[in-house]
Length: 118
Image 1 (cartoon, rainbow, N blue to C red):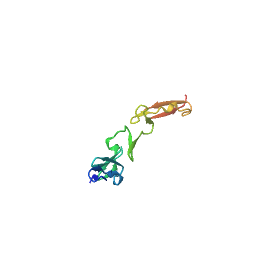
Image 2 (image 1 turned 90 degrees about the vertical axis):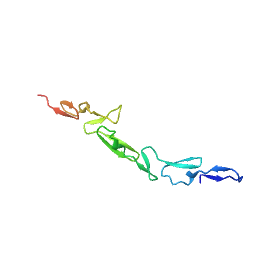
Image 3 (image 1 turned 180 degrees about the vertical axis):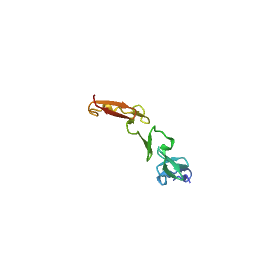
Image 4 (image 1 turned 120 degrees about the vertical axis):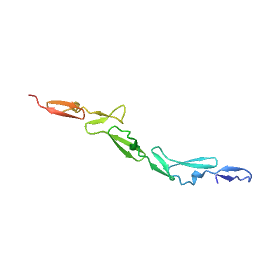
């Protein structure tokens, strides 16, 4: 099935089944056959490419959102993704935000409080 008789009637040549395949995403033709493959973030199940739930492996420190073919990490309120590793979350120093408090600001892990001068 993966070969066809050439025009000379003696030799055989590979048939590119990928031109007629029912592969869901990718098709790899090789001598005598072909193989269906999936893009990164998907896995082949029963001949179909299905989204991999990367969040099942808990790659994010706080929260994970599975997206088609990928995932996104989210941080809880008062935290932001770490610059060197977006899978981790670091405290946001809200006191560094201009005019967040009128007088005094105290930052703590995951939040802040405003105070007035005595």
